[in-house]
Image (cartoon, rainbow, N blue to C red; front, side):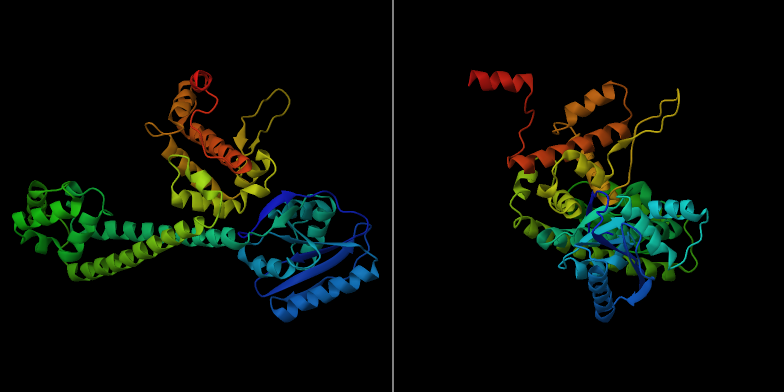
Length: 421
C-alpha cells in the first residue's frame, strides 16, 4: 500500500487473535483465528462505515470468545484499496500488519498444491503467513510527512503526463515540419513552444521576416538562438517535406497540447511551491538540504516516501524500505552476483538515483567517490546505485545525530586541518 512503511514482525503469540482480510474495491473478506487453530467461518464486509463497524464488532466478540489479550489485523498489500481500512483501524487497540502478495501466492500453492484463488481461501492463507511471522508491521505516515507523500505522488503522475504530451507534440511537429528539430533539437524548450504557439505551420513560419523572428528567438532563449537560427528555420519551412494535406487539423491538435502543457507546468510549479513551504515545518529538513546537490523537490520526495527518518533505528531497515538491500543466489560451487532486491518503494529508489546523478557532477559531494568506483572497473549504473545507498545512509546519520552535512568528514586532509586548528 502506498501510504505505509513496514518493519518485520515476530511470530504470533498464543493469546493473540489474528484477523486477516482479503481487501477488495467493492467488498472485503475477513477471517478470525488463533495461533492454535481455533477459528470462525470467513465473512464478508463492505468498504463503508457500516461495513467496517461490522468488522470491528466481530473482532471484539471473538477476542472475548477465544480469551485473547491482543489482536493482530493482517491484510495483503493491494494498492490504494486498503488505505481507508488501515486508517479506520489505526486508532483501535490492534497491531496492523501486511503481507507480500508474492508470499500469498506461494503459500497458497504449498497448502494444497493448487493455484486455486477464492475469496474464502485468501484470508486463510494470509493468516498462515501472519502465524509464521512473515508479515510486516504497518506505520502510517502522519501530518506533514503524509502530505509530502501525496504531493510527491501527484507531482510524479503529472510529470509522466507532461512527458507523454511532449512526445505527442514532437510526433505532430514531425508530421508537418520534420526539419524543425535541425534548428531546435529539444521540443520542450520555451523557444520551440513559443514558435509553435504563434506560428504553428511551416507556411506561417516561412512567411516571417528573419530579423523579427530572430529577435523574438533571442529574447525568449536569452541569447542562445539568434538571426542565423531564424534564417535557417524560415528556409527549412519553405522547403519542408512535411505533409500538406490536413495540416489545419494537426495545427489544432498542436495548439491543444500546448495549452495542456501550460496547465501541467503551472500545476507542477504549484506543487513544488507547496513542497517548499511544507519542508519549513519539518525541523530536520534543513539538515538534509545542507547536502549540496539535494534540492527542495528531492528532499521533499525523500521525506514523503520515507515518512519519518527518526523512526528508523538502523540503516539496514531504511535500505529494505528502499529495496536497496543486497541479495545473491548461490548454489554449490556457483557464487551468484549480488544485486539489490528492489522489493521496496520504487519511487524512493528513483529519487535517490537522480539525486546520485546530481551529486556526482563536477565539484559535487560524491564526485571523487564516483570516480574511484569507476576506476575500480565498476559500471556506471552500479556505481550510481552505490552512491544512492551512500546518500541514504548519510541522510539517516544526519537526522539521527541532528547535525548538518560536513563534506569530506573524516578524510585525512580534514583531520590535519582540525589538529592544526
